[in-house]
Structure formats: structure tokens, C-alpha cells
Figure 1 (cartoon, helix red, strand yellow):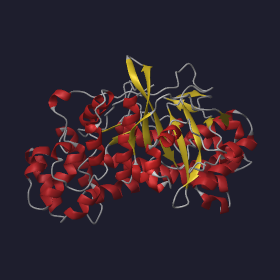
Figure 2 (cartoon, helix red, strand yellow; figure 1 turned 120 degrees about the vertical axis):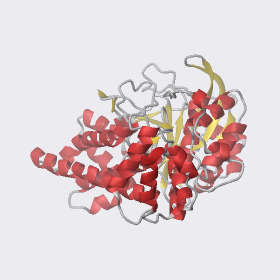
Figure 3 (cartoon, rainbow, N blue to C red; figure 1 turned 90 degrees about the vertical axis):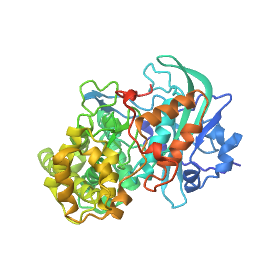
Length: 476
């Protein structure tokens, strides 16, 4: 009898959006990475997951009795163009489990083979991109940024054809759910208002139960998603995280970060930073992320109009007012975050803007700047003078120090260790060649990002000059 129990509530509640399917067979799966802490949190035994039955579960080949794996349907705006039928082309929802805190969590596979939504794709994934998601989602969780989480990466032993042949892998991912803005767009495209209502009720029950008791539950649902996304995007911006592909099918209803494809953490501070190889126009540049999030939320509002009010004009009025709260909520979260990063008791907007200008002008490393400022607050201004050189930098630091910043408070929110792009590439390149040691060291560093640890100095420094410009790829 299996030690894992997987429910199929999504498939039951929303059968029109769930295609029963199974993962492709993997003859010789080999575990590459496992988050033991997450496994324990889910009520799973890490030792069992490392054994043959557990590893087969992690590639979809040992599905518990009673589970009903499905490929989920959704639509989406991809780089602004609407695609009415996307869905899990290379992924499967194995089912939902209840963790040790009685929270419902999805167990989901990525790279498990073609589904009816594959649209000509091979349905597979390569080791490198799946380990990237493992590393970056581990880091995001440690930074207290809401995120889907990678439970494991398993090598399949088969080759995947991309620009060249690469070793294949399956990612086992955990999320509060995989409901997206694109899920609501798909339900709307069907023209079935009953399906849309059931989807909204499912989302309320799963993520925003307080909305159920509101005078207008579906407006309250939208307001809750707006609030969650405003907090999330502010956290991305504060950490210097660039998602890279903020399509509507990659924006969750829960407020968790999802889909670590062409993502990266910013090196030198610059709002125009783009890492994605396919984002030629900079639509999803670092500085555009709040605007894109607001645009995506407007698309969600459009889908909910029939549920918000029978009078369309009134529905538009109510949804517009709710959407307009995004900027206020985002600005508040961002301002509070910057105040905390700078160790200040009060808000100083002009001081913050001047700092960002200095960082951009001098191409100062985003992450290092704030730890160097904390060092300056303790009396050693040498590191920050290197990052913010010249009289303008010195004058800014002097004005900031006069406000008596709290260095200890700064160290609690400003990380030392992030998945720096050159370190990620080194770790992934080694892993593809069979050496997991650099990946293990990187994961260890980013899993405890705030604590100074001897021997990890190389994880705190910017990329060497020869690393050059950086591009990431979606992995498909």
C-alpha cells in the first residue's frame, strides 16, 4: 500500500479543464536533487522518496491507487498575443495532498511527456532548466518570497533535442495550486458561465476563503488576487528578481511565483535589465514588471465581469476600482520594503530615488549594495565607497548615516547569497556533465541567504568581467 495519498479535487470540480493522462515511462530514473525539508513538510519520507518506488513516483510512474493525473487546460496572453488553448503541454497534475499543516498542495510534474496540449512540442525537459528551477525556487523560498517549490529533479536517461542533444529530466513541483489568470481566460473562451463560476468558487475555497462571505464574492476574489500580486511583485523588485516571461498563464491566483524559465537575479542595478533570449522588445524587463502585473490583472478582471454584476457597466466600474488599488498596494509594499532594506524608521522617498539613480549610473551590484551599506552603518565605509564612488555617493551615504540606520535589521532582510548568474551557469554546466558538487554547494548557500558563513565568500561577489552579457532560455 502506498504511503502517498493524492486527491483529485481539481479534476472532479473542473472536469472540462482536466484531460486524464499519464506520464511517459522512464526506464531508469535517477534522482539528481531532493528537497528533504519540503518532503517532510508534505508528510513524505525523504528516505522512501530516494528509493526506487519514491523515484518512480517523482516521474509519474508509480501513481498511488485512487489518484487521477490530469493535464490542465488554460489559455494565455503570451508577449501580448492571446492564445485560447495552451495547457500543460509537457506537465501533469498528479493530484493534491494535504501537508503536515493541513494545507492542500498540488504535486505536479514538468517534462513528463507529450499531452494533448503539446502543440508539436516533445513534452520533455532537459536537466539544466529543471535544475535551474530547483535552485531558484529554493532561493526564493529562503528569501520569503511566495513561490511554487521544486521537490525533486530526476534524470530520465534519455536525450532531449534542443539546440543540441541534452540529458533529459523531470521536475516534481509543489504549489498551493496551479490556477492561473490563464485558467480564467480559458473558462471564459468556452462561453460556459457555469464553468467560470465553478472555477471562481474553486479558487475562493482553495486560496481566498474570506471572499466567500463578502457581499460580492467574485469581486472580493479579484481584490484578493490584486493584493497578493501587488505584494509579490514588490518582493521581486526588492530582491532584484527578473521573471522573464510574465505571460498571463504564468500569473497565479494564489500569489505564488511560478515558471522559472528565463529568470535571473539582476547583477548591476538597471530597470532595463532583460535576461530572456526571446524578450526582444524588453516587455518583461525588470522595471516593467509592476506594469505588466497590472495589465495581467486587467485581463483577469475581464473574465470575472459576468460574475461581479449582471449590469456590465456596474461590473466594469467595480472591477476598475479594484484594479486601481494595485498601484497603491504595490507602492506601499515597495516603499515599506525599501525603508526596511535601508534600516530606517521612516520613509524617505527622495533618498531612495537618489540611491537608485546612483546605483544605475555606477552600475552598482544590486545585492551587494545593501550589505555594504550595513557595513558602513557599523563604521566601515570602504565597501560602499567602491560601489557608490565619488562625491555624490559620499554625500548620499553621509545623509543616510545621519538617519541612524539599524544595521542588524538590514542584515535580516538583505541577502548575502543569491543564485548569481555566473554561479548558476557553472553549477548547471557541471551537473549536465554529471558533477553535482557545484550545484549542491550553491543550493546550500542560497538556502540560508542572510547568515555570514566562512568559506562562502565567492558566493557574494559579482560576476567576473569575462562572464559578459547574460541570456537565459525558456528550456523548451
